[in-house]
Figure 1: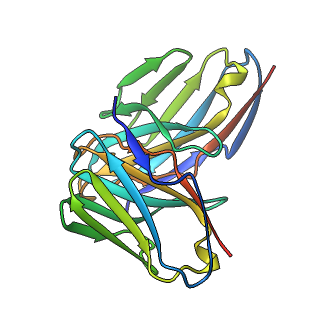
Figure 2: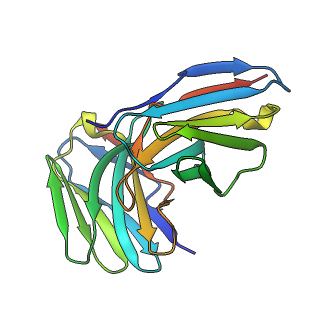
Length: 111
Length: 111
């Protein structure tokens, strides 16, 4: 079974802090994704990566950056957290052209 | 631009009352249509992939079907444990590995 793990289930940070969210997959998938999910707004793609050190902006990249130094690990970075970044963050991975497998999510609260 | 519209937004059924969820889509060259189930506070869980019109997939009480413009998720004799949000997503041939998600249908099955 594909396993996607995220570093924290719940996280509370203060405005202005730098925040790292980590995601690891164990199935050698080339594609990895970061989404945020908010009530009434659905899943919105922040960034995705189709190979090590490669990244593409999604629909809402502002205020975020990503890092993919190894194939199995994809990190989402909030350079200076703001209250409007309070959300559920979901990581996913896939082979090209196939279904995505999601992690359990990180619920981030920025105070 | 690929688009996915799911209806209804919410559906309440009595246990045993069969129904269908709709996913209408527009996509440039369908490369896959995906159904996911999401429980509250968790990441989406992959259910089915459909690739071409006329294709059907089944799993327990769920059956997914596909036409050139829409997909249906049929739920036969649902149980309370089928209560969840069901998400539909499409991948087109211009999306470089990304999927476009609908906003989901929240299904509640009452005993």
